[in-house]
Image 1 (tube, rainbow, N blue to C red):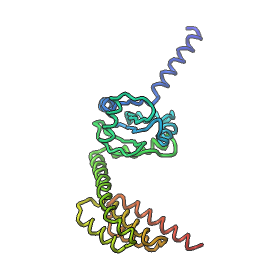
Image 2: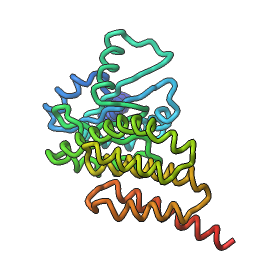
Image 3: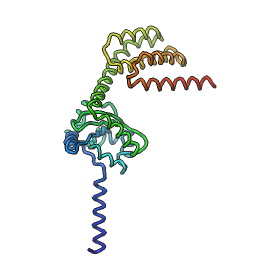
Image 4: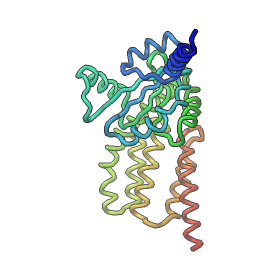
Length: 266
């Protein structure tokens, strides 16, 4: 075979290999589920605003478009659901994507939702700095939640988020007068009464209490780290150790203490 023809064959083979290594994105979740079932993989769904969302554009450029990210196809079928503002989109696709955003409770972009092969969610993430290799490691960690327990925990977390939003709106109306009067004791009493009257999980309670009590303390005793630390210590002591979100409260407490110590040294 002539060398020129050999070179052409080699070039074609190289192009085929490169194409096979690229991450292919579907734009229909139903199709993604079919492929995932056939290939026994999970599904990564990118809810994106491709032509207007800055973080979406960065995530695509820094992670999804990088050649190293193609390794993700070993574990995931990729689906992009776009919500553009300028780019033309078929009416059927637009309506279908809108329905999926409502179904999964998508509130911002980019949202990266991980589903099992049946389309049941087990984890959620978004933009992460550090490039494709770091992002692949992040996804590998999240993939561990693709179990019956993981899917159940994710469903409960989403339910808790909905309750926090609903109760938070109701609680804001109740507490607003106490903020205006800077009545910390009255606000805390109203909060305790509200929490006692509602049925909620420990995680929902923690989210509501931390937001309300910290906001009340900062409004009624501005610039008083001792008062804020006292509130945080009380919340930590009252919360069961198995509530996952408690770790964030402890981290916040450590930041407040460090800031107070630094201010005292000046």
